[in-house]
Image (cartoon, rainbow, N blue to C red; front, side):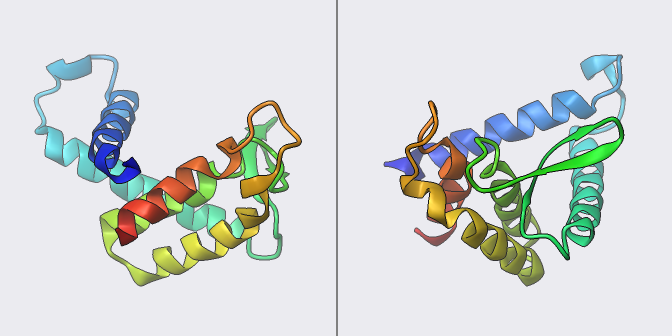
Length: 138
């Protein structure tokens, strides 16, 4: 059931990502959309490579940036599933096994919260990364 909605999720994520990356002129840009998406993907991969390097010596997960500094959180934070989920998306898009390994590593870091009930949003922690895992291996 979840797998049947994954293509729609991917289209939505792509549409949101592209809309964020478009210049102020919006869709009036003369460049082909595929070129813009490719550039955005290359940029995202570079950003995530930097994030992985920054997290090499830490078992926590990225939460946000504040005052120019990376703020990290443990698996109980409601945002903990988004970084692993993003890594699964990159693994799927690039087909590169190193991204799959990184995604699996960060997924293991949040595995303990899939039954955690200490928040008003139970299950949100691992939702995105678990959804991606299901879609990749169905």
